[in-house]
Length: 427
Picture (cartoon, rainbow, N blue to C red):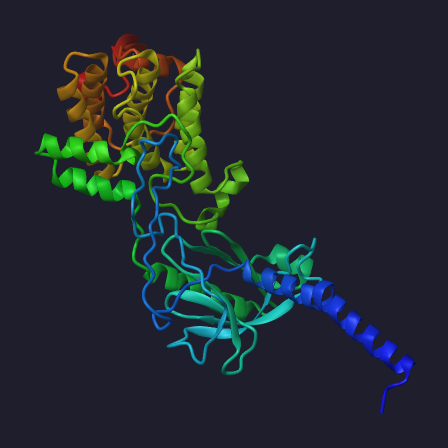
């Protein structure tokens, strides 16, 4: 029996509206919600999901020329994590902590207006998020935890403003904020997260790995030259770097106090300092800029080793050795050697670089700076109370002594000429 014409019209319109809604309406909104849920996480792959992925990674600094070669490393220098589709997981092995937490809603001025609850499971290597607590719930993503991750304790100010205690976890790509109404639950999560982070194996950057190789082959100049030649990360670069040479925690983490003094996270400050070093090549009055670098290292001691490594990098095989632009790095290195003592591993790396420079350029200005720096490092015992003055920096740049007036027994004062690394025993 044929349908009446009006009924056919109603069915066609209903089918058309269904198609339009599928293309532009509810389904599109669901996809947006799913994308929003996924982009806050770094996805990781499980060993049970097929063969192990082989990932080729490059050095953390972007190559500024075609001559710079890529370097295959175990990531977490860059912490690249192979992506995979969201999946369903039956049970997580040995969960440390699990429970409901509210996640910050992206794109809103105040995340506590519409908190969204998710089921979180903390394992020995990741923080996993599920759509629910039942077996077979969809896993929306995982934040892989490494030794470079950090977590912030909940603060009273956020609780007063929102009524929630915040747990902030810093990963490589994301700053992940979770909320709970109970302080004891927030503390339980923070303590568990910190314990997992501390249990992870320390991450080593390519620079650290090469430092070990250089130390092991220090008696073979041919092998040293080959290591330097094949790895651009160890040599001078005219372009910027996009990651520190040494490992620093993601986000502010335990160094939250530095933000109150106008400093960013240590990783960001390390990259900024490299840009400041490059400016030394063309500045007419470098003493002020050098003092600023020294002051930053004085305020943020973890950056001392990083600046030493950056200076070694910029004085290794520069395009024009011994030119005024090249000597700026040596002058700052002389100031650093009289102000801060590097860690043993970095000092060994520096000493090898100084010896190599003196042997390759005997009698040059660079060799003379190298001798001065090695002598200063032998007398520097730790961090100075104050960074050198502009007059002292000017003297260090020329490797000359500066006049100093001292109170002496028996007479009012005495005038002596000293260098920045002069000890009291010498006078």
